Image: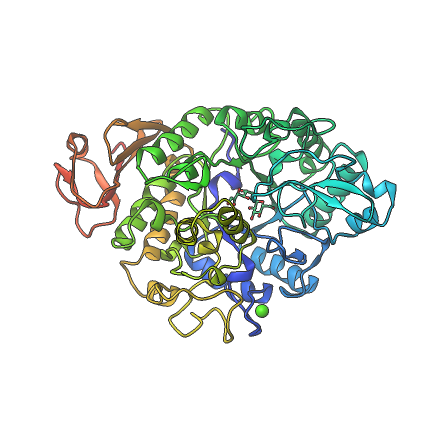
Amino acid sequence: MKKTWYREGVVYQIYPRSFNDSNGDGIGDIPGIIEKIPYLKTLGIDIVWLSPVYASPNDDNGYDISDYRAINPEYGTMADMDHLIEELHEAGIRLIMDLVVNHTSDEHAWFQKAIAGDKTYQDYYYFKDKKRNWMSLFGGKAWTYQKDIDQYYLHLFSKKQPDLNWNNEQVRKEVKDIIRFWLDKGVDGFRCDVINLIGKKDNCPNGRFWHIPRGREHYINHPKTHQYLQELRDEVFSDYDCFTVGETVFTSPKEALEYVDEDIRELDMVFQFDHMGADNHFVKWFLKPFKPINLKRPLSKWQRVLADRGWNTLYLENHDQPRSISRFGSELMRKKSGKMLATMLYFQRGTPFIYQGQEIGMINADFDDIDDYEDIETHNIYKLGRKLLMSHKRMMSKIKHMSRDHARTPMQWDKTKYVGFSDKKPWIKVPTNQKEINVKDSLNDSDSILTYYRKIIILRNKYPVIVYGDYRDLKFGQENLYAYERRLKDISVTVICNFSDKPLATDLLNRYMDQTVILSNYPDQGDHEALRPYEARVYLNEPA
Ligand code: ISL
Ligand code: CA
């Protein structure tokens, strides 16, 4: 594998609305991010991924863009943005932006011109005389009637997010210009939102009845998507030292290779979703109890299939996912399980992604009232569930596990009223179940999750085997155990994790008696018979 900065670097995702409010209006902003650059340095990350800050009516918190070359005034000005790029670079941190080009906002000038009757712009979107039976990824219908021009249009997400017609060469040219605009400003790459959905089957036929979401066979990983991405690579990305990470929903590792194989390089890496199904039946609202094997199996599979030809992303959280400790660890053993999850994940082969708040061990919010939730998806699903005669209680329990808002509550900087995020009431409620979880206390605590994350990053920078080594599962069949080895020439690193709140005996430990423990979430090395609850150990073996 070629050595590159985006394989070696650690990425930190910032959700600007919830990160830090600098001017007391209750909404996070760009100057607020600049204030926290010293914190990012302390943490030790190399790259920031910034969720959308573009002009947007905020139907989907910025994932509905009305102007790709303007900054949402809630977040600041273009001068602030330039300043952010400069200050980050000054601090040795790169910046990637979110590129949301499967769809625009319905308030984008292109869509506005389209519905005013301009045929040129109607061809920027999918307008049809007859509706199709496709379902939106947010629940509900994906084709909505537009009365001004008496046509239906496609929106795979909310009806304020019409899909762009990538068949249209002019649309592709617009997107290329937007990408160049930002790369010329100095940004270092993009996280490409639902990029595997941009190609659609000609004429958008009705979908098979039983597919969820219905219509998906006509747009997920369509061959045209590969054509479009190759075009972007050849004509734009290849001119810059930048990297792209694609968000690819409903994609197998084999299909992912068609994007990220080193020889193809349409994208540099992708976010996969298989492991996000560890506590649900494929669709996140159909919950099932979490079993470690359902996390281990997909993660290991992606390690295996991408091994020599591709590169993985390592993530457990982002702005769309509930908090990982609440899902896969234990809120009761928050510190132990939070550290164990980080150990399990970040020693694998791939680029680590940390989502804001994850590094201090934030957990799901304790919101009981549907009105405490802000997310459009949460409200859509609540309405849909109620329409299908599911009880209020049942819907609220789903939402309490799975709402995207669990990741969107204000970043907890200290334990003041608004957790150091703002002086005013934040745009989204501050949970009451986690005041003691905050950056200030974590920084002063050698046993904090934050301190542990800093150690992981330091180790990763020190030992190339953690970045580039091969991956091999150990004792795959043992329940509640996740163990693997990384190897680069004659150096190896072995990770052994207990996923349960009980001691876990394993003969595996005997094999490592002579090796050095370079990281552990317990104060002492423990014995060679059993792991303690949620224990994680990392062994190093290097020639003398
Ligand atoms: O969050 C999801 C389900 O709860 C996912 O299906 C999500 O919609 C999917 O991963 C696509 O996500 C991306 O595009 C969406 C946006 O709402 C998400 O925030 C973004 O990450 C539409 O732009
Ligand atoms: Ca603000």
